[in-house]
Length: 151
Image (cartoon, rainbow, N blue to C red):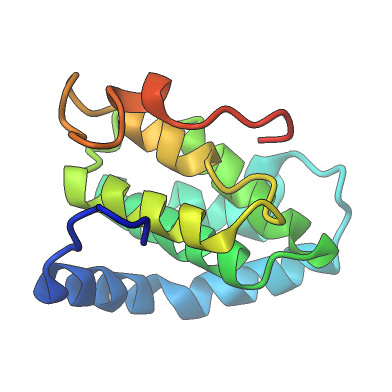
């Protein structure tokens, strides 16, 4: 977490991890299947695409948070499938992101450091769904978040 930021309530964070644990087995399996598959396949035809298409907004947010967390922790050249999943979820507006979810995503992104070039893709997209001024201390929505050439 960045210095000077107020931490999230432990129960809220535990709730995020509980929600992510529900989607994690299917997400991990889909990522592994897609890693072995044709990288040029349309997203909707991939295992990750089928999984994303089967979830409601809350499930898709949990999947996005899990994939974001996975990519931030294990960022290397082999996370292209996870990065693609994160980008696809980031491209979907109106998922009902909460301020706490976005703050958690931002904390994960800042903790990952610059080696994870795509670390602000999902937090920026999720912040765009929040009302102006909903992220005090983080700038005013996505415009106040860092811009990265690669992300």
